[in-house]
Amino acid sequence: MEYLYDPAREIPDGFTTRTIPAHTWEVFPCTGRMPQALQGLNQQIFSQWLPTNPDYKIAAGINVEMYSDASKFEQGAQDREYYCEVWIPVEKK
Image 1 (cartoon, rainbow, N blue to C red):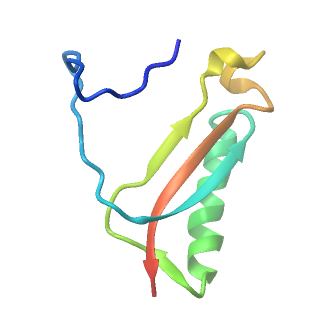
Image 2 (image 1 turned 180 degrees about the horizontal axis):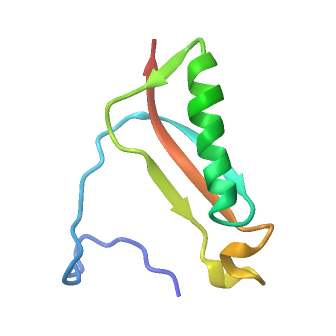
């Protein structure tokens, strides 16, 4: 079952909404078993991509992670094809 955010719906107890400021985002796809695949991707982002990128640096803001519905994969989040994304706010150097 998929739920899309609808601001007209009541927010369940224990949840809050947050407005994310507009940014330029670098989106990093990630495929593989969790959490190992995501940990490896984060290591690459912060030890390789950011330090060597001549055009962009990390911007003030929050990182966003998007996870696929694990029930759609034969082995759930442990499936080799499981998909997620890491979104990093960036700005020109």
